[in-house]
Image (cartoon, rainbow, N blue to C red; front, top):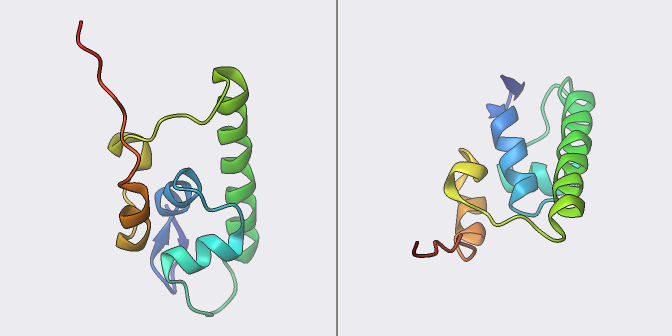
Length: 95
């Protein structure tokens, strides 16, 4: 679902930014290339960033640290995020 129609930013984009390390709405806006528009997304964006941060913190507390990033976990994100997040890859162990 779109969070910001003016900038074509989806919920998946926002979640991907948080998983990639964005910790505030300002960082998400910057990473997604969001420019000022009508402003109707502000409330929903703030709520979604908060929800996503809470989920990431919960996973970290259960697992004892940051969860490994995988391509599937990141979801579709903008190229600016992918370039930073590509340095972290999950390690597959031989059985």
